[in-house]
Length: 157
Length: 264
Image 1: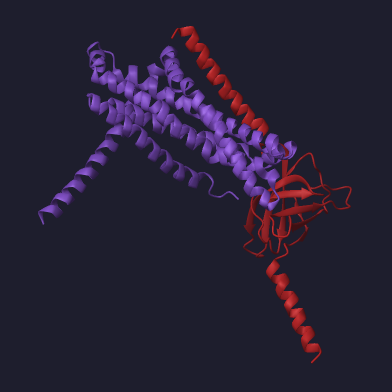
Image 2 (image 1 turned 30 degrees about the horizontal axis):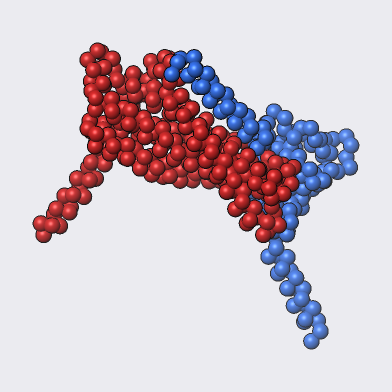
């Protein structure tokens, strides 16, 4: 095998390898690890986060605006402290409302952000969302329903 | 009683033999790494080995990748459409190829196509005393013969694995979108939404690099320490393929359990 032909083949081999990597990175996958340069971190406290996981999406009006980065238990108040990174293209009023919803009946849980009415102050790096609503836990919903039924039964002997 | 003792002796001998081979392979690995400076700088040597291990394996990798993708497309569609989610076909095909099938099947094919060839070449060089002749001319055979083949394999393996995954995804697309009528946009967008570059693509590439090191090391080791007879070389080739396959599958389990542990 002549040297120049060999070089040509190896060059071709490496080139289609790079082509495959480009295809895999651009067409097949996406960088969901959000660039930390273009985000700001806000936190929120919930009484109960249900099945929320790290990397769960943060949506506003159904549009993905960020991801949950960290979930901790506040040792003093026994509340769940959720930190999320939000894309800095999206700015929210300081009195925005965060709730944990479930996509579908039994799907994954995500944080829904509803914009508040405040016009002066915006959520910024490190700020906390004060108004939150916990996840709906199916078991407590069922038990509440059963208690109500039982009480109704006692009312009419 | 003496039969029990014989069996115990046999067992002990086997274990000592295995451990001894493992230790010698580790020493050999270190020696190859120490002496690979010249091999990496002499591009003509390295290019020949990349051509030998990579370019010549191209056809089998591309064709197998295409067929694996076609089968994944057919089977995945069959299962997914029962649950009315045939548009998730792209996700299924891409994730199974990028995380598991691409690196593992490409490494198995690479071991049987290129690994066996490397073992045969080095084994025959040893059997015909070419390695000894080199040694007498003060040319270190590990630096001149072994190291370029090792690095050629290590460089070729991730490229081959990526090409395998790419061909597989195109095969899945061909079956799913062109023949079975899954929506083209949904196929690609559901794939992009759930395939993460760092977690899926990059971990797959990392896996294939590890497999490349393992297969290349086994191939050069078995060749270099083969018995210098016709039978010894043929045994060494068989051992290369069998050991590589076992090591690939075992390493795959270990790597997977570390990589995808905390992922939902």
